[in-house]
Image 1: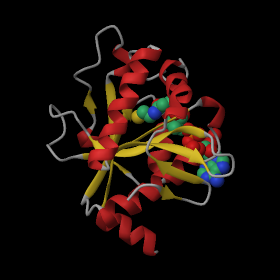
Image 2 (image 1 turned 30 degrees about the horizontal axis):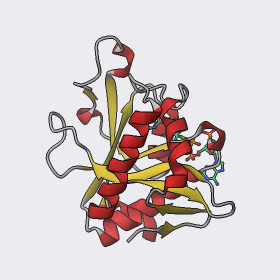
Image 3 (image 1 turned 135 degrees about the vertical axis):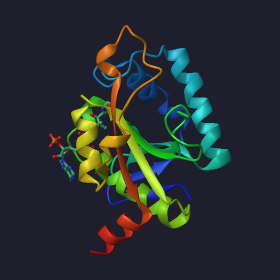
Image 4 (image 1 turned 180 degrees about the horizontal axis):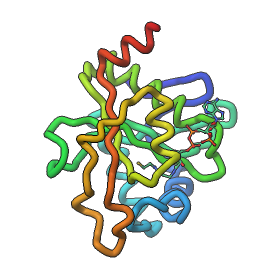
Length: 188
Ligand SMILES: CC(C)(COP(=O)(O)OP(=O)(O)OC[C@H]1O[C@@H](n2cnc3c(N)ncnc32)[C@H](O)[C@@H]1OP(=O)(O)O)[C@@H](O)C(=O)NCCC(=O)NCCS
């Protein structure tokens, strides 16, 4: 179903010309503040290829977000397998995002995420979408609240794969939205 279009954005698969932006996002300490690692340009390139193939073959993963007005890529937003079987049952779908810092503060991810709810619940038949973040990641949590997700404190967890070198990145919060709640809020 991609590309998806919103009033200001296009969500699409990645192009070779997005490589610089993808590398930038993966090494910027501000963007990566809540991750215990940075990626070298080579690692970012390899990840880009993996994401591109996943989108081609499954239509799921983190799509490139492009500004319609200028055609420039600004970050990513997408639906993906939560890939944390120690915590989430198989088949759990998460929504996730990352934006190059110069594009923060414009509501782009809020807009992209809303279009992904419509896509996931309407076209993919999902029953629920979750999001999780480091408990200190205020900006990311603000998006979850802005797009109508609900905090599920019982599901908050200590991330099993964050190394002991980064204890402040271990506590995670979990937010959820069901298809039913999304339908109610979008018809209100
Ligand atoms: C998380 C992240 C994507 C949030 O970026 P963001 O710019 O705050 O999010 P949005 O694009 O939705 O924009 C929302 C901001 O734009 C403002 N805004 C401006 N115009 C807006 C509009 N038309 N609609 C909605 N918000 C708008 C909002 O007020 C908000 O700013 P505020 O937090 O200062 O109040 C970004 O900080 C990031 O990439 N962080 C690093 C990676 C990361 O942590 N990813 C998540 C891992 S779980």
